[in-house]
Image (tube, rainbow, N blue to C red; front, side):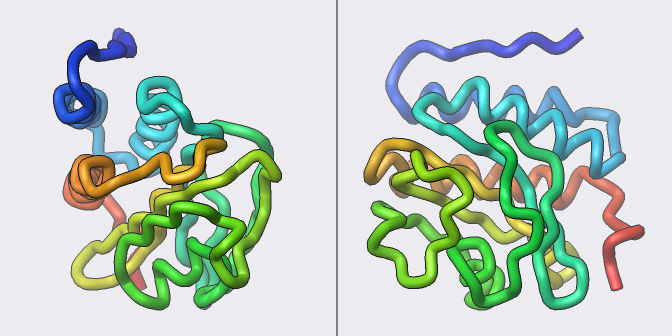
Length: 166
C-alpha cells in the first residue's frame, strides 16, 4: 500500500521527495492509465497550492482529457490553443506566471491564476501533456519545472505507450 508523504524541508528537498515517491509509485507497473491516474493524484495531494493536476493525451490534432484531480475540465484542446495546445505546438514546457496575461488561455477553472504544462515525449513523439494549475500567481518556477519534467520523463520511460503511438 502506497501512502502519500508530505515532505518537510526546503522546496528542493520536498520536490526531490515527490519525485522519489513517483519512482516507487510506478515501480513494476507499465500500464499508462494506472500510472497517470496515480501520479495525478499524488501530485495533487503533495505539491501544495495547486487546484488541478492532470494529463491530456494526443488524439489526432487535439489533446483529449485523461486522468486528473480537481474540478471537471475541458475535454478537448486543439494543438496551438491555450497553454496546453501551445506547449504541444512549441514542443516545450511552458510556465505561465499569470494565465490572464496569456493570449488565448482556456479557462476551465476560474480560480486558476498560474499554470505549468510539460509535454510527454515518447520516441520523439509528443503523446500528451502534464498540466498543473494553481490559484496562486507565479506559483511555479524553474525548480518546479526541473522536478516535474523528471516526473514526466519517468512516466514516459516507465509506461507501455504502444496503444497510443502512431
